[in-house]
Image (cartoon, rainbow, N blue to C red; front, side, top):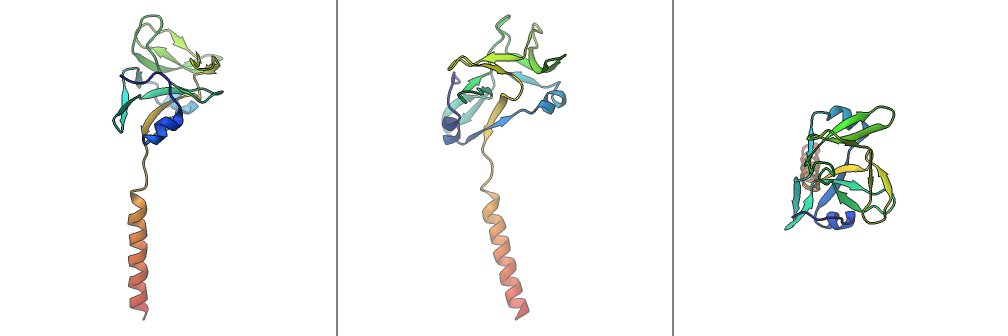
Length: 144
C-alpha cells in the first residue's frame, strides 16, 4: 500500500525524484491517464507514482480517487479561463485546485502535480572520465 503524505526528502533518501508536470504537458499529454493505483517502488518501500507538492509546506500528497465516483483514473484537461486541470475519466468531473492534508493550503493543480521516478545519473560519469584518460594517454604517447 502506498503512503498517504510524506516529505520530498524521504523520497529522495530512497533514490526517487519529483518530476513536475509543466503547463505545456497538459496539452501534450491530453490522451494520457494518471492512475491513483500506480506506485513507485524504492528500496523496499512503496510510494504513490503521481503526487502533488504543496506550495506552502512542500509536503507530497498522492493523487487520490475521485470524490464523486471513486474513480481511479484521471486525465489532463484545459479549463476555459482557469488554466489546466485534471478530470475523472469515469464521471468527467474536473478539478483545478486541491487542499493540502497537512497544512490546509488551497493549491492549484497546475504546477503542483508531478510524478515520482528513480534518480538517474552517476553511471555515465565514470565512463566519460575513463574515455578522457585513455584519450589523453593515447595522445601523450603518439605525440612523443
